[in-house]
Length: 217
Image 1 (cartoon, helix red, strand yellow):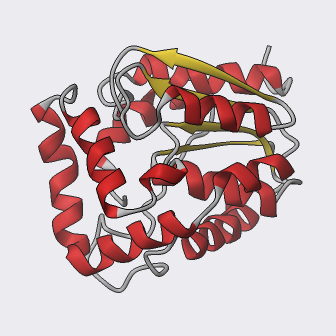
Image 2: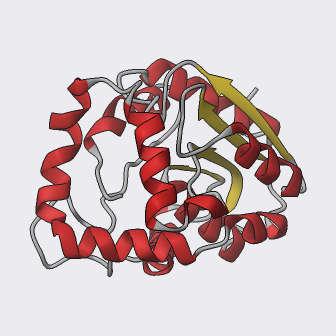
């Protein structure tokens, strides 16, 4: 949902073995103007364009967490020639959560197992984004259908969920894994925001996908 702070350790974990970037899209890390509208499709377009400029033909392992997983999935479908492996962490939203009551239930299930230390790593981004833009991003995520998009992604796809993740229940991850032509899943300790302060774990998961794609030994 546009917050970056809780993924900084994950970035460090990946940077130990690969050139790594954490993208600030739709731009809640800064004040306006922002690089793209706060919608999943527009963010995917911005990331796809970024890949054309920065990747420069190098193989890419694309990682997304939460609604970022929905974005990463769309980018992999649009730029199959660029994305060699895909990691979807805590992918949102199963069909039953594509409405207010459903997402509130998922939120209640997830928050019971999250740490209060997440607040300073996320709240400032949400404040800068504002309620209107957050609602716009959430609405676009509800209109997305990852279960259809993933069927068109041919690269290796690793799906990861925290064992207490209310936004990515096991049945939803299983459905996505089955739909992916080359997909497998892993459950790790924690809840929805399991990458927070677990940079080593996050880096190891991404490396696992890179190995599956024969990008590293």
